[in-house]
Amino acid sequence: MLADLHSHTFYSDGVLAPAALIERALANKLTHLAITDHDTTEAFEHLDNIFESESLTLIQGVEISCLWEQREIHVVGIGIDRHENGLQSLLVRQQGLRKERVQEMDMRLQKGGIIGLMRYIDTLPCKAISRNHVAQFLIDQGVARSKDHAFKNFLGDKGRFGAQAQWCELGTAISAIRGAGGIAVLAHPNRYNISNLKLRKLVAEFASFGGEGLEVSYSNLDPNKIAHMAALCTAHELWASTSSDFHTPVNHWMDLGKFRHLPPQCAERAIWLHPDWPGRTDCRAG
Ligand code: AMP
Ligand code: MN
Ligand code: MN
Ligand code: MN
Image (tube, protein in one colour):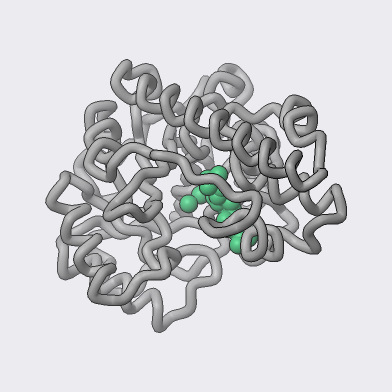
């Protein structure tokens, strides 16, 4: 069992096409792969009749950006019915917010004498425009040295070229995922830059809204932090998920399937033991 339940294609801010992502999942010996693009399920529209494998099960997913106490939080939906109306209308709204946000960033860039963002965006296949794309544009223009530099100096909440989006509320994202038959999983809990106390509050509220899973082991998270996530997971009776949050082969520390196993205390709450786990039958094309 090697389940990577959080990954991106070029329909959001990853770099691979869905078929190439699956090829890489097969090469990396995954047994289960969830594609969870930001605010879009477009990747699955491009896989019919392409994917067929006995060794790998593809799971339909999505990663929704939302707000909790005015902070941006990400919730992954695992095993969703992507055709469900409530979920799709939420995703369309979120994609619209992403367009408006990038237009605002373009305006700020133009004021600073940097032109061409929208032309660059138009060349991309993405359905959900991300700050990650803007960061790449800033690198291409010689404005930023790296993605990290771009986010830290230009695209953060207080950055010169940054713009915020009024994402849906946490409870709305969870309800949409559940309404589409999916399991809602709190993504990368240690990346929100909040105190432990606040994180516990977030996880408690996430669970009270109907969230059922927590990413416990992901990409290069170290054993101490994994133990912390595992404790949170157990305390709130959530299911434990594993993920790379894969975007690009360049970030080799976030490659598909590259994360530590769940610690023993989570063995009985591994998400693949969830009664609604989709991995047995979902989306196995043939
Ligand atoms: P957005 O969803 O448009 O707000 O863009 C956020 C995305 O940018 C995340 O999903 C990451 O893929 C990427 N990202 C965020 N912060 C950084 C960073 N410091 N360095 C590189 N990529 C980042
Ligand atoms: Mn991303
Ligand atoms: Mn995320
Ligand atoms: Mn992600």
